[in-house]
Image 1 (cartoon, rainbow over the protein chains, first blue to last red):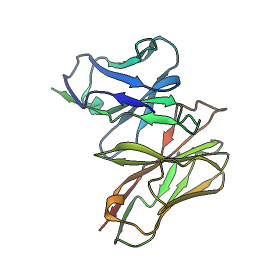
Image 2 (cartoon, each protein chain N blue to C red):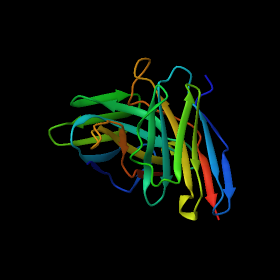
Image 3 (cartoon, one colour):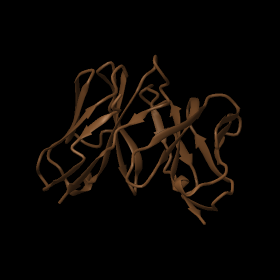
Image 4 (spheres, rainbow over the protein chains, first blue to last red):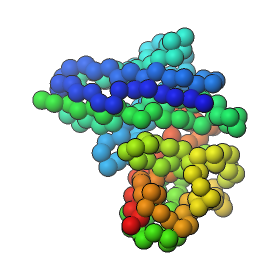
Length: 113
Length: 116
């Protein structure tokens, strides 16, 4: 089986930096993805890490440490529009042998003025 | 491209009725996923298809749920009979192993289902 742990809620100030952590336990690991979902909207893809290290895309960066089964999403220069839920997801092996994405429960980020 | 299209966007039905949700994936994508999202359980994978063939349906909660993909541009998720605990937002997503990344899934707007 697999499990993912991420904080349920985070609050940060506009213009600041926030880090959302994700730890995972899986039988077979292929990579870690991050998705953003605004209230009432659909999840949208942000980033993917297959190898250790930092991937940067504009204000968002994602980090992976395979040895620690840990990753994080870093959001810089926070804007009010960044208020949303953020999900980490791993592609992991099911008992069936298939390897779909499994999503964490999500972290609700509130950006305040 | 129009993105993943789902219909209806909202569905309110009475317990015991049949519900059919529809999805049109992005053209050229060879994977299609059905998810259910609730506050309690988060985003759960129900079933996924590759090249119209069901690959894993271990997430389908009960025999009341069934899904089909008769061709590359259409899939349905059917609940019969529906129960109040089926109330949730149902998302369809698609991705491509060849044209993009399996890890980058494109989600439709979802169908908000309420069973009374």
